[in-house]
Image 1 (tube, rainbow over the protein chains, first blue to last red):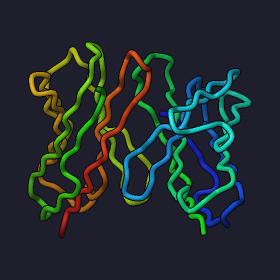
Image 2 (cartoon, chains in turn red, green):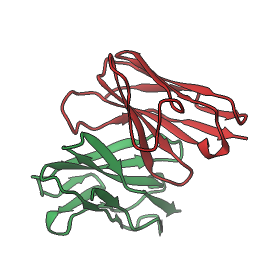
Image 3 (cartoon, rainbow over the protein chains, first blue to last red):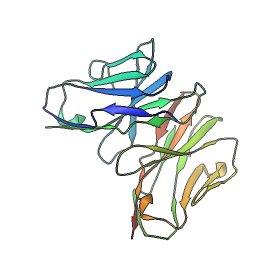
Length: 116
Length: 114
């Protein structure tokens, strides 16, 4: 299974600043996903990031607030821009190692973000 | 509507008891997949099982077993002889073939008391 490293693992940020979260995978994957998990809540998909194309955002999430880069098949970044306390969440990177639909997704350890 | 419902928000049982986590789903797809993931306190999500909509056979893996019933749109998860290390949040999830994405239930927080 794919090994996923996320950095930072946690951070405390000031309101109005931006933070970029990195996701590194130990193998080449086509499909990468970014999720948000608000305190005590389930996972909500922010966007799907495929290499070589623009990220596809889910309803309620926009590129200006959550810009994503996917420069190659092993790396992606998610930026949380102009942060407010409502952005305090765990942000998780996920990959689908195979190309077949419904392959189990593998997740990083997440980035715990707190906004003051 | 596509939805996953985990009605049990939080469950506490004493170690060695059996416990069942409920999952009910809704989908308009005829082809779909169901998953269970475990999220221990450390935060990472661990894949436990995938079941496709055409395979209603129950599955057992050690102390874990899963009961899939299309007639009731349920995919329940049972832990027998629970252990403290089973304490975690467990998520049921539905993969929708038509949308090529997974939606997660709200999770059940399981406390195994020593």
